[in-house]
Length: 174
Image (cartoon, rainbow, N blue to C red; front, side):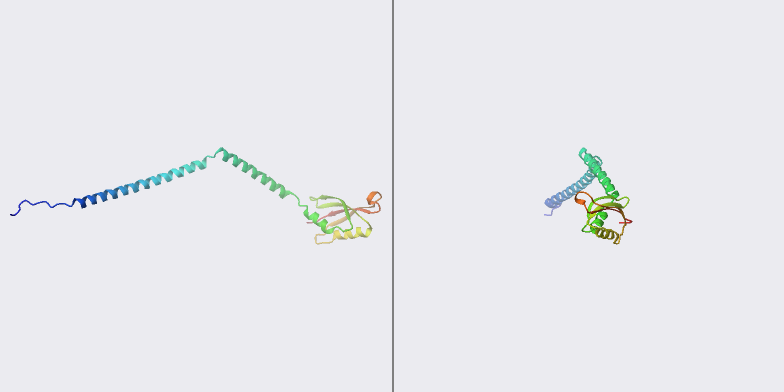
């Protein structure tokens, strides 16, 4: 017999269900990705605003440290100014070290770095040594002006019989 009523073809429900499940799964993954992407953007914005707020406000400890550092910086500037304005006496002392005769004993000297001069008191055993000492002071590339200020013969104590002299030395440049 010929069938007049057409029969519906059996649908493959498994294939249809699996496609629907895959589509829903894909839609869920896409929605999850969008949610994470949005959350990441808002989290970055929150982190940046918190960092800015933390950068603006300082704690009491940070304020104390900043005050201490600024105080130390001021002290360093003051020390730098003092060291910069201080007259260097090393060239004067180096000149004496290089120029003093071995037989001359320096008993006293007064140094005036601002005036670029010194007054030297010394003693020697004879006049020849005094003359050699005066010549030694006048030699060199930075020859100073040397003036014999005083010359006496010692009469008491350890200086008895020794030649006591004072020399004023003025340096044009050092």
